[in-house]
Length: 490
Image 1 (tube, one colour):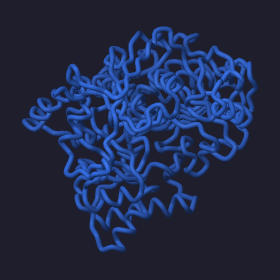
Image 2 (image 1 turned 60 degrees about the vertical axis):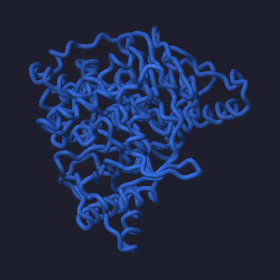
Image 3 (image 1 turned 90 degrees about the horizontal axis):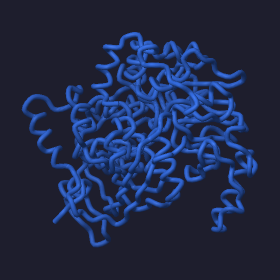
């Protein structure tokens, strides 16, 4: 019987099934961080339990770590307490920790692939909704809650209802200046924030096949905003080359055997899906959200819609509330909307290829007066590579703040990393609900290139109007850059 790539992985990991439709599956990797883990660890301690497989459990500090000078003490009491708790718990329960000062510290969904811990065919669980990001490598990755995290800690298994399967077939050629972030925003705009509820989205099609690994990670990351339980992309040669040589990746004969297995992780011809969505991206323009959920989105050259355009009363009411919160009016041209803050970062768009593209656009230009522009790399390794390439110089000279890695403005938990009330932010992150980036903050989701152009103009701008500087004019070591492109497959 023909099977999908997700089905193949799922069936290899099922241990038991209940009559209610839930299954007990084995978890190959468990990732955790400082925000969602303290209660789970405390419950383990109270019950006298240990972590079942500490060798398969990896912790990182990312959500509320300060992104400023790390030689200074952490002044926020909550952040300091959560970081100290994770350090103590990791030591007590014997799990690997990439702490605040680790050279590999970064956002969990960025560093685990960098380290070769995320591999095709694995099941992965993490106390973070955007764990779906790891599906870009052909893994079945699930965001879980605290009680589920405790269960995985104690048993290395997870009770979960098997998701339905949705094929998202993407066809067409993306224009220069249009990215995978625009693709996923367009998709969510079409299917809505509930269009994928109960499903695993499998992204496929010629457009996805041409994408680099970073772009695929963006697609899988934001599938959650379309309601999906998770997302997956069948691994290919790009994934194999990305993985090879990573610190935790298989080596030698083990790698050869892994390659043979990974090559089988493709959806069979005739495999059946519960739902199919086809998206043609020919002529797609850069996308900008205007409301307070990712489905409230439009092209950068469009106008803010009127609530009267929505036939569904619920959508009409949601649009009315969103426009009031966002301080926008129907018919207003999106390119006329000024911004106060530009944030380039998060697990959605803070990888090396994102930073290189931004540097190519902003080199020789200046951030508009009155705009605070911040770049937060997704990992300290990404930051070091960008600095070795000289990418950071183009950003700093243009007027961007160059920070250390962390979740930062995306979730507004780190000390000082938030948007002030009433201020408008063009953000490369994944969520734009009310107060997401701080109380009263107005968040617009965009791609890194759109964010860069917006920072230069001080209002939402179309990156297609900008000629990007050649890579050799931005990076100081072209040979190193080409090596990194091969290494990271972007």
